[in-house]
Length: 517
Image (tube, rainbow, N blue to C red; front, side, top):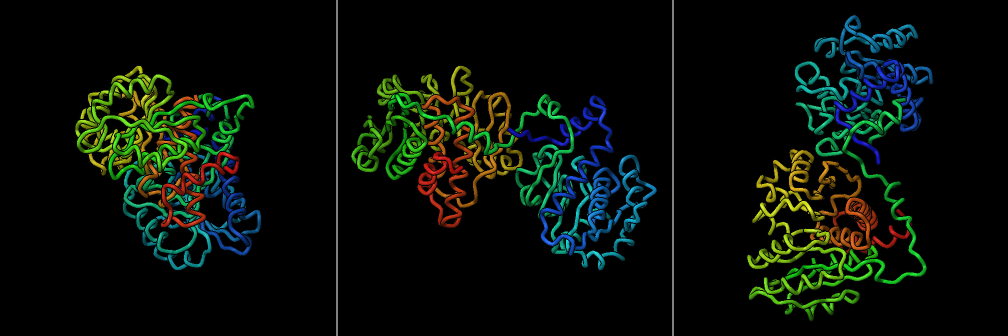
């Protein structure tokens, strides 16, 4: 899967390419600018009829801008560079490429101060496309003064802005604007995507992201210890291409136990079960409070039900513990939590089962709420435990606030996953998968229409359906999360985001598994 870099990791790759492989920095800059110019030419129709302004800073990002300008000029495209510094202040590869462009009679307008910039504001309105080459991924301080004025003005021009490497002002590691940031319609980045491209609020600034090869050796990228990845369709397809053997039966595809449901929340249990079956589980048994058994037998045709002792609130009772342990004897995985209720005795049952069962457990919804009441239940290092919280549930698990979770989704999730020895699937935009080793997988699929009751239960069922078939925990999570979002995208495309409901997601699973992914 494609690695996702921090600014520091990308700088280290650049350094090793230059020092270890002896690739001159100016060659990397040449490759970056040439590739970016090609993307720009291929993205905008009738490019030869467009006027392009490149706004260049004094560093390597500005140097990339001069290479882009040179290639566009060679194609006969109208291009002008606005340099936000005195040319005498340029150094290294940026200076080299400025000099080449200057000798080619390329047009450069030096605007080193606010006073100078005021004189060209009207001119910038005449261009069709703006290219942002002000700051690169190394920016780590708040944008102030003159540069802030320029960025804020460019954002008002209502022109397509192409950001080189990252929108200027955006933190490459967090996706947060450092005071202000360019709002790009297209970002052309080099070698690897950066974390800030893929998580909020960076997602709202980058537009479409294109990744281009600048010649950093593949082996160098593979060997670099970068623990963050982007889920990709090709890898998911590889897992899905495994055929079923003709001489097979339902037992070969596992038996999943789902412990779920309470009065008013039988739908959560039903959707988890149905999603598991749609993902290919051989058998699914639903453990349910006994008074709800009749309705669940009517609701679910292919799922077996097991009526169990219940509390006065019609939730599962602690007296169901021994029966559940027996039920687990021929199962490969257990789902706990969807619609289970928050009655104290039921929560005690959940906690006792977590401590006792040796099967992989996928814990969701009310199961997570139960765990949050006694967080010292974890870690359980000899078990496979998969937690699937949304930000609110995550906040309760770490005794924090939703705001704090959203501000550092990756950092907080990694810390929790590693310290508690659990696999964590933090739902949201985007959904993250974190392993006990600290690996992070960012999912690119899904849409706002999936912010609807029950979609989390569907995801839990999809994960359980794969684990019970014998897939390892990590690929089960990766496949389920990617396809869950993709099924939501298919549904939203067909009926719109506002009308999308959880069962629509289940209905899209078969076509995706059939090969339409």
